[in-house]
Length: 228
Ligand SMILES: O=C(O)CCC(=O)C(=O)O
Ligand SMILES: [Fe+2]
Image 1: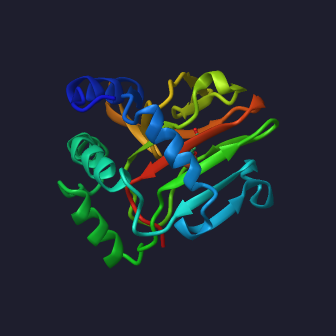
Image 2 (image 1 turned 90 degrees about the vertical axis):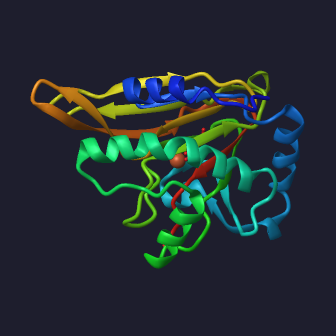
């Protein structure tokens, strides 16, 4: 497990490609302990069957507050490292900036009517997949999020984490991100700035998961803005 994160490297990767692999952030024991919470419905505020909404196939649940350990500290720590990167992007994209701490962002969300927690756990079995999407839950959007692989990659086949980016007037480009158990991919929620000859422009990003061919795949999604 990685206690200190190499933020300059993470910033370089995020600035260069819109995503970065980080960690492992969680030990295998913690990954399995979190997976076990999935079967405790009182921990969650809602359960989504993806097929019903056209989101794909498989299911996920949004945690209710209070979030289980080690999520509160992990989210606060990731946020503190990501806020300066997000502010760099906001300046380049001429969007409003973000506070230094997650507590302040959470207060801003509440004031904007976004008060429901967005941390989620996802569970995929054979044939399940997650269509390309963006995790927007209101007008207030923190531009970076994390997904942590809770399963050991030996426990399933397929189920690759996929990012697709759309540059203006170009065809889409896909990135497949390999993850080990407990590792996180940090990625752009909606868009990222790319330097062009006439200044920065916006590249749209979407993420999803390719079809799981066999086994079980579970992930933890950490989104820093709350939901309306
Ligand atoms: O299961 C995954 O790897 C992706 C989950 C996801 O869409 C998210 O965390 O926002
Ligand atoms: Fe997502």
